[in-house]
Length: 322
Image 1 (cartoon, rainbow, N blue to C red):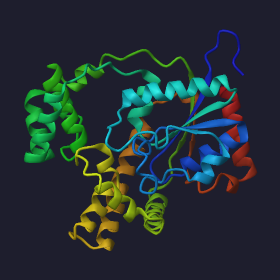
Image 2 (image 1 turned 120 degrees about the vertical axis):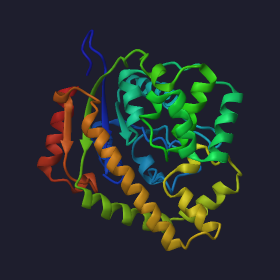
Image 3 (image 1 turned 90 degrees about the horizontal axis):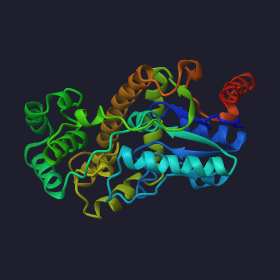
């Protein structure tokens, strides 16, 4: 309950890919009357249910879910759009007397939600088209090198291989005359909520095993057909949905450039590298006050399989923050 003058309470459940955060969020929401709100930048795309391991229809039927599969792959999502949508869903949950359980692995989304985000002006179609053309003609590394000459502060924060973010940074610089980092320093207002956070931080070997198992399960569930249907839409390769883990690799297989086994191994490698970056981000970035953060140093396979004492500890932590 929220006392007079107090901010409403929301729970963040975060962790790297395959850590079990979706299972944990579902179990918590089911037990405490919550709404699971997606904070995964790829699970927002409706065409990517299997390849992004979105909750199943049966799981979505157990408790209310929000912001899953709500955006077409042809429309790029971003942190500013997601923040506005998430805050609206949190208000709906509060009005219904439910606990917002924000679940995902996209650190940028959590930072935007909690701390606010700069209002970057519309960059214009000319800047966007130039960024995409340069990316296609030169590749991400060369575009990153060009960015470093005009906006070194932003370039220093981006990996040269991160084509999506490099292109976005070029677009912002060309369209506004200011670098992305300069805009990001102008934080918006903090969210009018009290956040507590559960961080899942399992051992690396547990994640590696889970990633391999998940990709095999995705293939069995129709991931290849899902990617084939996505490619049939003829979308711009620079769109975020086209870069979801597993999509480029399975697309290469469908073009005859590698075997399915090779595509699977490559996808597992790329996903593993990403989980390492996610884990580092979550360990060093604060989503809630340290006293309001609970860390689980193990992978959560199924909430019901946690011991009674583990579940009691989680519920006690959440109720303390309410």
